[in-house]
Length: 392
Image (cartoon, rainbow, N blue to C red; front, side, top):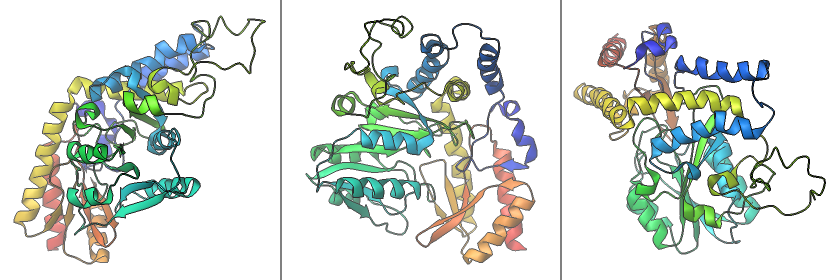
């Protein structure tokens, strides 16, 4: 599926490591080149957000909205995942003594963020422990009560590929008046994620993995109308409404009072940077999202799950253990020691097979993560090499 658009594939016999880093499509060059050309020759009012926003920012928000089947006003640009989650959390006004619910196997960035947030506001952190690497929905539900501010977790786990039933979890959270806030970096772009249908109040996702915008700093946020109505973000200037309808005509007004309160922007733009947006990120990210939307997330999901199922089925048939079942991440448990499995990973890498070796809280395995540029031949090559390496 569109392999020719991904020149990096030539470096590998099989690249099956999107959960670590997605590959950038060549279509990004044209979009980024247009922005750089405009700036270099000062084409148009490149010094004005009134020109740059419609040219580069609004298109990426439109593509992100299409991907999630939401309105563009509910979508914002972020710097990867952590910046988005931080802005969402710090737009809330927690009461001391409230609690936040999360999971024990989260990617370390989320615990770091939640620990500092909870410490600053005097919140209790309730970390749900895994059962054999997984988290039954009822276990998460038992941690939620009427004093829960938010449930903050990954919708797809980075090690096990566990996929949370968001619709059911949102019902439980909302019954107790809690927000459901999602780290979607291992979900969005690989599988369908329609936050309004699932009852997700807010999410953040970096672009560096399944959204095909690596090493650009790209990311996005979504926030529901209800969340935005309650949100009280730290404001700058450019997450305010232009006082005269546009910014260009306002700068020269002599009667301007810099200390006069302005009206917050509508929609997710109220959570925005407050200063000039990172247009270079927007240009690159927009081209990647456009490619995903052209391929169709429903088709991408079918494709990814078919490849993941083949890996899972063959691994199980060979007597190996497997994490994963309903996401595009499959983690094969070889039964070897960690050191022995690390040797298997090393030998696969030497043979040009790009996968990952991942572990958390005693659980570990070879993680495989196929995406739209992979074929069944890639999967078959991986499986052949895996069984050869283990047999040798």
